Figure 1 (tube, helix red, strand yellow):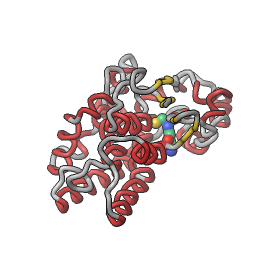
Figure 2 (cartoon, rainbow, N blue to C red):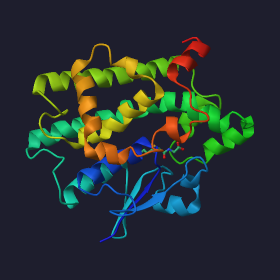
Figure 3 (cartoon, rainbow, N blue to C red):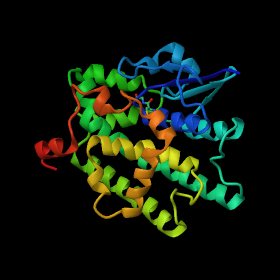
Length: 267
Ligand SMILES: N[C@@H](CCC(=O)N[C@@H](CS)C(=O)NCC(=O)O)C(=O)O
């Protein structure tokens, strides 16, 4: 049996899959699964070789016995179905439908939102500020999925409107987690069972905390705050967030906390 993951240490979408592999007792890269590190900073995700594996030009990509599976949500459902270990999907149809509603919401709202401050505060200034307009627009043209995202962003990154909207989306996500746990008694989003919903949203909240945005939830969302504390103690979470897997650590030379950036930019 061969299990391979094309991933990037600090990529939230890769972390979603690493958490699920760890839940299935496969926590160790290059021991339990073959790790292919894709360097996003060097645009390895856009090479012809990688595009043959994932034509969307994004990480992760999962390869099981030679079969390629892309899209983190599809990958984690596959992992849960195929590998032994604790089930991360409810047994009953209603539970499965509710978990999948969470999965769609996580893809549509917080996954998209987290990209905005990530690019505004770090990736755009670090990677593109020295680019000419032409070089930046040529780069955007190369992207199979994200041309529009990059064109809207510009090489300067996003402005206050987009960042504030994204923060509102994250606040909504945190409120929904808080309410779900208040209703079902926790400790997880679906209740007693740790599910794919927890695994998919965890890296997004972790990224927001890493960037210095935990003020969005920490003053008043007690259930959600406790969920996050409990999550961070889980072995699968600790296996996923090894040194170098957070942007504050990976890019410590360029990284700046949200409060400093917001003070400087006046929002
Ligand atoms: N829907 C895809 C999205 C994957 C994705 O956006 N990956 C990011 C890293 S988290 C990426 O590869 N970005 C490349 C880029 O920004 O150019 C999935 O969930 O697998």
